[in-house]
Every structure is written in structure tokens, then in C-alpha cells.
Amino acid sequence: MQLDTSSVTFLLATCAYLGIRGHFKRKLAGATATVSRSSPADRALVGLVVAGQIVLPLLALFTPWLDGARYTPMTPVLAWAGALLMAAGVWLFWRSHADLGDNWSVTLEVRRDHVLVDSGVYRTIRHPMYASFFLMAIGQALLLHDWVAGPAALLAVTVLYVARKPHEEAMLVEQFGDAYRTYMDSTGGIVPRRRARGVAARGN
Image (cartoon, rainbow, N blue to C red; front, side):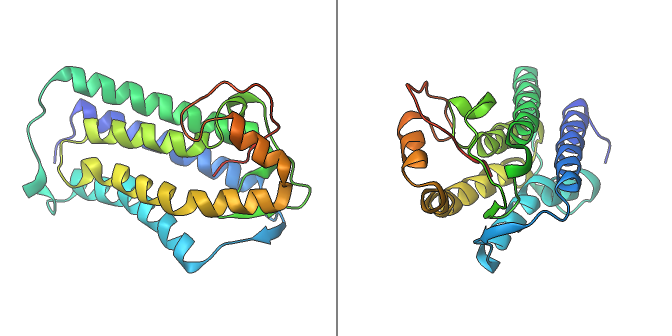
């Protein structure tokens, strides 16, 4: 199919997102985890997000398989809103990785010499990486004019967040105790909230 401006915008943002993730994965190659809660279920959740963010959109854009789900864009304003949300999500995704440094991992892990991070975007929000996924997912829904591929990421990210967040925070409470409980009480989950005090969080 012929790509329109909205589709190209989505593809450029997705390439930036994948480039950021690849860069930080290479930086942490060989890092040792002292606590790991990785499981087939958790890896399946990651796979679900990959399908929603990448696989289904590519099928919609480059194959005829989802042609029946295409619809006519309603207004250019929505495309601009989608582009801005995608850009904000990519920036937050990068900033979340940069602020976490060596404390980041794809799966549920605590690394050797893991420290609590309470600076940068983690100052007011515990899970900015999930927040970035939601921003990009809403942007995707506005940019891709397809009833399947458009909202696929939003559905996948919602399932990931609801299913994984309790396990991730339980692991961090177990690792860091009252310091993390204080942090939870004084920050927002995926919506920023000013904190009076607290110490830190680790992202997705």
C-alpha cells in the first residue's frame, strides 16, 4: 500500500523507539541479575506488546491482510495529536532509560549493585517507561487508520501494566523495604505527582 504522512510518522517514531531500546540493551549486555522474576507468563506479556506495537502495524501497512479494518481519517487534527503523543512517548522512553542507567532490565530483575533512582523523570512518577508506552500507544491509535492495528498497542500495554505492575512493585518492596514503600506513597504510578519526600523507583 502507499504510505501516507501519518503512517510515515508512526514508522519514524517506531524506528526511534527501537533504536533507543537496542542502544540500552547493548550497554547492559552481560550484566548480572541477583534477583529475577522472569517467567514464561512475563515473557508472553512482552511478546504481546511487541505484537501490538510492531507486528500488527507492519501487517497493516505492508500487507493486504488487514485491509478490511482500514477506515478513512476523521480530521488532520487527530494526526497532529497522534504525532505529538508519539514524540512525547519516544522522548519519555529515552529519558526513562537514561535516568535508570544500569538499573534497567526488560524483564523483572534486580541487578548486582542495583540502586534506587529518584532523580529525573523518576522524581514524580514511578513507572515512566510504562507511561511512555501509553503515550506511544495512543499516538499509534490516532496515526494508524486501522481498527485492528491502531488500538492494538493500547490494549497490549494495558494488559502488561495491569498484570506486571503488582509483581514489579512487590519485588522492589522485597528488595528495598520501607524506602520503596515511602516512594510509592509520594509519587504517581504513570501520572506524575509531586512528592514531599522519598527515595526512588526502578522502571520497566
